[in-house]
Image (cartoon, rainbow over all chains, first blue to last red):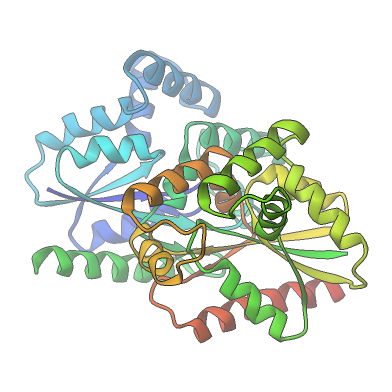
Length: 184
Length: 184
């Protein structure tokens, strides 16, 4: 299987990029959904605090690759050669995915200032509304190793001064290049 | 003082970008030079192992911001409003620089594959010549928090499919935008 893993800090535009890839016919799995579903399964409100607690618990119980393992289980039932994984948070997760195929890692990035604006506009249940909670969430992501994944990615798309359409087009351009390399 | 701090993994092109900025008249200080000079001062060969040991020692003795403190001391004698700092390795260092002025953080980035090619071609005394020593060096940089600096940078320039001239021009374009924001 060819796995296109997407990483990036909260609010950088990962899900928007992944959505555009899905619109071109690719299948997708979202790592955040694994945590969101587990949170709901326990009758907890899927806000930032609860989802953070569940993520830490799963990682403590099953190791740094716990969420990636959940993804692999879901992926096993999907009939596809190529899959987009939205929301990779560490190289430990990338290593888990490498057991199931060839992995390319794409960073979607924006400055903290831009991400804060985008998150406030998005207003998902787990999105920070104050700069303090934004910083806490950044710190949590960095503490599980997202900086390493961002630093070691195979390519990057900047969402700094970008429309949704441009972000999608740039991401697709990177992915198409990778897919043609794989086919060759 | 306005400090343009440049971060990025080994071989990404930080020094090339900084050199281009210097050619436009900006002053520069290189964090690696602080370590290289200290290594030579102790009559040690400035290779990767010795420089890594000195860096760790300075950080253990004087804290995560040790090299940034050395830079600030050198900068105090430089008569300039704006300075480029090449080779920032953590947000702890950025915080030290913030005590002396306004800081903007620029990441220069390339994929591991591309950086390994660039480093082998460069062949500085501390550059890795095997993939194993390349990975060890990446790990060392990540362990001191360079992933956090890369993730939280204000802007990024990609050096993936770029000529030296393009890397310089893109970096200058980001810096010019920042400088006009500061002047306003």
